[in-house]
Image 1: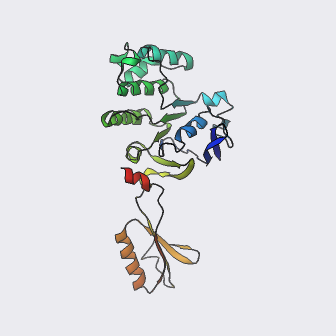
Image 2: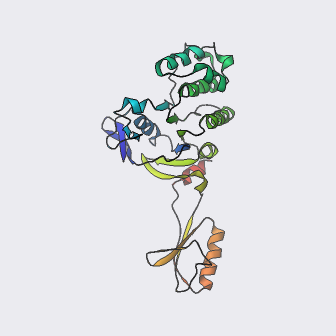
Image 3: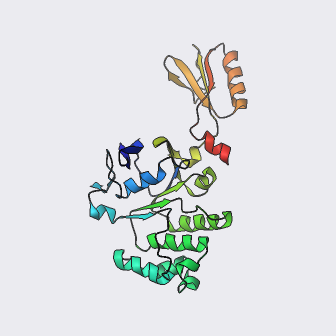
Length: 275
């Protein structure tokens, strides 16, 4: 359970995550939710208040070997404005290793090679920054809101680029936009007020869910195969008011007694409302 923060202030609280397959895991949360703090703790910049981040059984905070397996793209620009694109990429490649020409080629940066970073558009700067973390193969990539402060067209281009570069890699990608999460991610991790509130495949995300509980002595397994027994009565979960009405009618027709009927809390509702 990972907790971390700054000074005496705890920002993220007892977060427990396990990444099991190479995919893009989108960390979704409003501004101030703790996404950047989580990323800084994962990559070893912040010492956790409690818990550990482990990669190949190594503690990322205490093991330099483990940290070298992680690439982190901050939401803040870390490239000197007066450097040319080529010199900036070469500077980082000389420190950490990597193939500058390969990155220039795959990110289509040839036309920007000799331009100063300060002269680039926001979209071009983002592409160069992305190139910096893909100079060398890593086991884990952290991208903190890589499409912030760019227009929708550039944002889409960057997502497409990252989707291509991230194949068969473990990637954590933070955002506050559910549409973006659905566009690029396989898994969705929701952070709110520093706590983990949701972790599942994006394909399983639903806008609303309704829970119906009922008691019956009849065998209804064929009629409602998804129902399950909880606390002495049957429960079924559906996604629309129409399904609620249909199932309630079936249950009543079977002579069953309705015990519970309610809309479930949805930790993603605020993000649906923002779309």
